[in-house]
Image 1: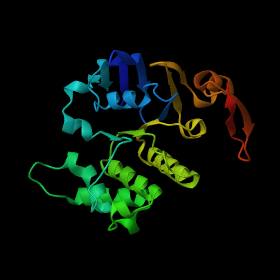
Image 2: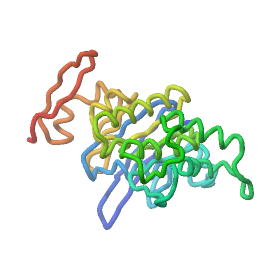
Image 3: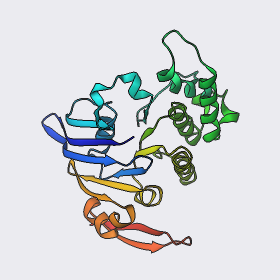
Length: 258
């Protein structure tokens, strides 16, 4: 399924948050959206799934305007994991993951065998099977993030949007989450669109990258070609250098603020 945004404008309090943004997301590929704080990254993500409808322009799915697709139908093919999320204190991991099945249930129907299979599969993909009966509130930060990710996976979306999925996680748990995302993309050809802060995660875990600065897209394309030390310096106002790690990956390292 091909998702595209056409000439998107978002204004808040007289300030342009997005200005004339147009972009396409290739089916089955991973796209990273990066840029400075306040550039409009999260706003674009919310526009792409109509979590924010206060925009002009058009978002289309296989050429069809998203606004003409019913909310339930849209939720059956698209899932988002936003930054802001909360669940009742006594919610268990299994209960949280089961929330992802709501778009697929009939109005008067209870859980089906397909629902149970999707929930179990999501728990297995995120290595949470042994945590199914634990309360979400009792989990560590990394475990909790995996639980929320499992909820979106239980939706079995064709398109998955992630807003800073590694925020507040330590290095090991960041890699854990990024590896799960890569695994889901590989196994199910899920289109992944993710807002990331870590430039090297964007280089190593995406097929394409969009850079947003000043409410508009300033660069887009292949991560290795687009995310250079020189461009990083211009976008984030830092001096940066590159080095090659033991696996042969080129890594960008910021040295100091300009």
